[in-house]
Image (cartoon, rainbow, N blue to C red; front, side):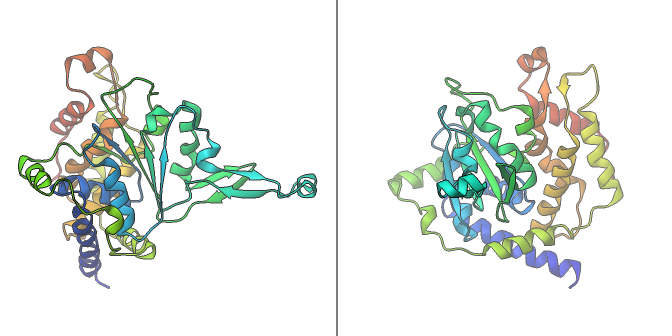
Amino acid sequence: MEPQSVVSHLAEGFHSLLKNVEQVLSGKTHAVRLALTALLAEGHLLVEDVPGVGKTSLARAIAASIGGECRRIQFTPDLLPSDITGVSFPPGLESARQGDFQFLAGPVFANVVICDEVNRASPKTQSALLEVMEEGQVTVAGKSHPVPRPFMVMATQNPVDFDGTYALPEAQLDRFMMRMRIGYPSEETELELLKNEGRTVAPEALSPVVDAAGVRRLADACRRVVVSDPVHRYIVSIVAATRVPGGNIRLGASPRAALALLRAARVWAASDQRHFVVPEDVKALAGPVLAHRLLLNEETESATSGPDTMVAEVLDRVKVPR
């Protein structure tokens, strides 16, 4: 099949998913597009926003649209790592003596895992996600158990209320392909919501538009989107610009961030029915992919609006290839 034909099929599947999810999250096309980009790029998503804007509904709508299994984990201070990954136990006394243990899978074994208010669990519990987000498997009692594919962690956190929360460590933040905000609805959308008295389409009412095997095929097709050498160098230059010593950024983006930006740009290009990536694709995704990975100096963070501003300044400095 010709590259353009492959991308046309991919774009059709992408926009079918987009329209389906938008039945639940009306008026938020850009946010839904970012979330689906993370899904098809086989990455994970951190949704950071105030309560009541549809963070959990977005995750549930995506799971319903791909006909996959969705599990929700409410993160609380008393949550244990085994509550996420699962446990190994002996079926009986004789089995225990022989070392024959049975594995009881935890809620992380699903296609879409919603980690609600992820920053309310202890660092020990948060660390239970590190292996599965990077390697797609869970190791319990020395034995590895792969999770299904597609697999996506969609975590939510409230950026305003910090009482009883634990900041996500850098190693975990780096495993999220993107961080995004949904934002408040427009006045027109909110007016329509009031007229319907909140009776919107429930995520569970959505019909799947593609199955898990179809999502895997779409994700594999995204890898066929062409990335030229100048665009490769452009991504490297952007990431390298965040690591300049003595600047406002204390910790720059990692090589994992560069790979995430590349994979996301491929999906973004395909959703625009192009079989090649252009610099505008990279610029559109640089903020969601890079900003949450940057650590700023304290003086810089207090004097500016944060990492998003730093990414915008980096994009202004780095020369765009023709």
